[in-house]
Image (cartoon, rainbow, N blue to C red; front, side, top):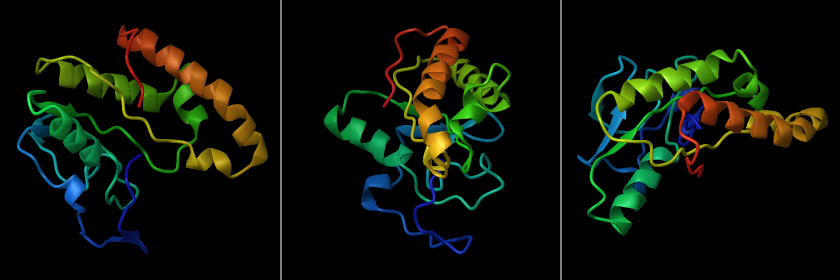
Length: 158
């Protein structure tokens, strides 16, 4: 989810909930494939056709660090593109999934490993009954292809 929290009429109100505040142990891979301290809007420069706001990424990372202060550094790799359907990610030649794989591999070049994928997608797939029926099988295909292409077969999806 690219994050639309606090966005009204294509403007972000710049309100950041305490759960989403900056933490020097949370980094993000920016649009130039460089690591920087993460902050809201996390998808700024990534989802360039929509106004980005607050999403679940920072809250998720902060919650992990709160539960395990010894976790180390978390690198978030924002890849969401708002308004996309699961079929845009699951297809055999999906440019969105290819970009996700590319960005993930770029982040891995800095060291570390994939610990989990935070995935929140599907609002577009509720617009028609046909799309909602397709979602489960397309989601399974997306997971299968992603695991194969990343060569990580035991990645938890949250």
